[in-house]
Length: 180
Image 1 (cartoon, rainbow, N blue to C red):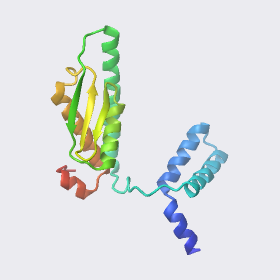
Image 2 (cartoon, rainbow, N blue to C red; image 1 turned 90 degrees about the vertical axis):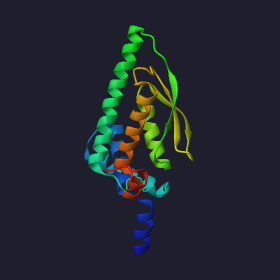
Image 3 (cartoon, rainbow, N blue to C red; image 1 turned 135 degrees about the vertical axis):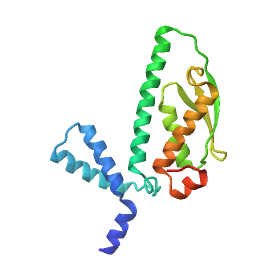
Image 4 (cartoon, rainbow, N blue to C red; image 1 turned 45 degrees about the horizontal axis):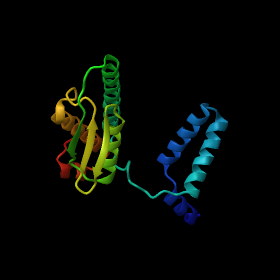
């Protein structure tokens, strides 16, 4: 029995099981016992049949900082969407630009999450990532309204800091100079 348990522990993750169960439930738009049971079975089968390597992504997750990250991100998305819509509807002139952001961390997962979250905010899009140097380049809509180049840098670095506080290890936070 210990072989089976060791095999399953390498391939199974409670978080992944719950995540796949949530997706299954959303897919069927029902919260019924049969949907939950079939979703659980599918989640377990997927993990056994198609195992993913352990990333350690949530090993250092901080709930409070994660909620702050999600809340500020949602507010930023709404504000940016309203701003872009207002500029488009009014026909106001605007100037776009490309801004270089030197991130504090060059860790793959931190850069990926930071770039993805910046990319999802209307009016900004990541055009290039230099992984080794920890640099991202953003195309910014209505640069002046964003506080020009420095305003974009400050907002982007603040986003990276929230990502680091929510997901990075204490050692990484210390290395890049971020305090909880």
